[in-house]
Image (cartoon, rainbow, N blue to C red; front, side):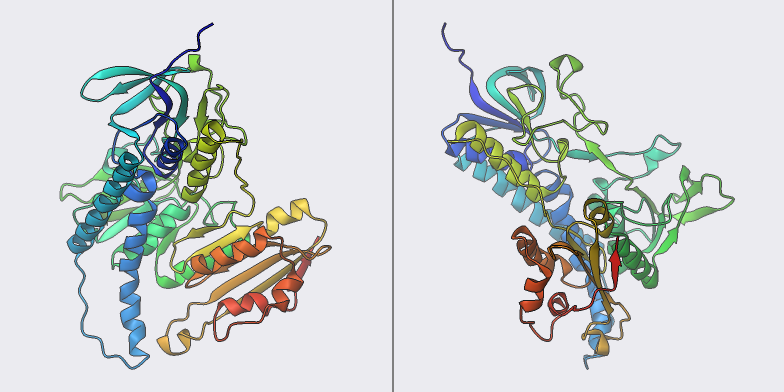
Length: 462
């Protein structure tokens, strides 16, 4: 029997970090590769996520920096801020990065399409661009990422999500942010730092999700309250009304009060896998209860010829994870052996103000897996704040298996926490023990030295 021939060996749906990495590696390994993106190459992280957000975080730090400078002898004139200048600079950088993504694909001999793709069957995709065409491929990779989810409430059309927030033409005087996950809290810090009044509506009492250590959640909550961000806990959004003057009134469920004279409402209550109009049930792709495409350790779905990576899949929704997964799928399909991604001890950062860095198990997770754990914690005012006038405190935590003394988790809140946690993740990946942390000579004076000088556990949990 003659072997079936296809137009492509590998067709990637989605031009984000994971999809682009998979396409480039597969092409370098000799496959005939095509990729399609319906918006702009670069995906969530580059276009409407990590990169533009971090640029805005940088911008929002300067107001505090000007104030801190006074304590060190600097005389600073009256500062002013231009929202338009920030957005213009951000847009230029994002356009530059997006162009690089597409340029690198073309340099790798990948066929690049712009348009919406749907999967017809295990080896056929339909591309809707200027015309509609069907293409055949031996393997398909779904790398379509995630999308914000908006609640079904009256007036939701007046709200924006974390997609549209990057394109506001004016800085809001008063912004209401619905939700208290990491995206909501990052933008609360951004707008507060830039001078907007910020009100956060949250249906619970503790911020961030259960995947974060409770000590971290409590510490960052207090720091954000200290900064003057207004939180309204145990509240749910009921509806948004537009006023004659163009502002908004935000009404809350089961409450006798409301938020008035609001310029902007941003909803950041969660994201879901971006699978709309991608395939139908007859294809046989299995989804989990969150709508994510279920995959095995190699990224393969329930259909043998179809793989998935990144936020659309059932693993960890982080850009560096998607990149590793994309590389692994390409190596598995077109390299010399199957490659999986080790997703243990994956570090992450939250660019709140102050920022969070975390890797490994939380105290709550460790208690479920280990008989006894030792917990080391430190709360202190860093040296810089001795003169800056800030009352902000650093928080650092080690979670240790009491029996083996293996360090199970490292958590930090404070300036440079994301940078410090990256290097700490190497130690955890290597299985470092508390004794090895203790045996490491400190770098002084630094905040990071506290991780190797915490000698006495604050508690032993069973």
